[in-house]
Image (cartoon, rainbow, N blue to C red):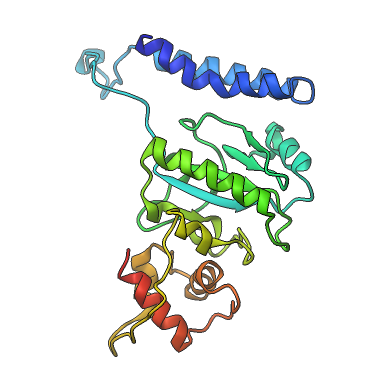
Length: 272
């Protein structure tokens, strides 16, 4: 298979998957998907230099033979905050919604693949992790069918773990780069909610967790600087602290740092 065929296969694969599974309800979105793919393929096939000043001859096109598709380096986990997976699929297939994800995992464990992993979904919004501010361009977004106030089902988490195993192996995603929407957007988002089993995921290699035995932090330890080092946007320190506690503490979301919180934060700070 040549490079052009490989690119077309990667881009068109999910489209054929959706067509085979449910051609009727989403025929309109499939048509728009095809149109957008054609436009992007046309862009990829262009072989013109980018002009750098008023003289067209100032920039020349010399095609390299050494390239591939950009790959995701993060996985961002969400809850849908909607009442059913059908409602979410409808939302993600309407242009006016302007939101999407690569995958949706239903309560019964069924996984809906909505966008090729190499393409940029609109799931993170205004977000930041460390110095990264365009999270959509470097991540895969996974939505779990959950209204935001309920536990996640066993079938759902089992399917999620299988999906994460595939993604981590396929794209060599670092263990620490499996995080939540609330982690990257603490001022705006609370998902996935405090029922999400982050510890279970970490035990399988998807995200970090703190050790069972915790040492007392040194007197000079600054928990707010530690939040920043881990990756949190600390421009609103209370929001960052609540996001951290939603991920790692879960049974206490008050924007205060207890001695236990400080020990957990210190332990994780040393891991990042």
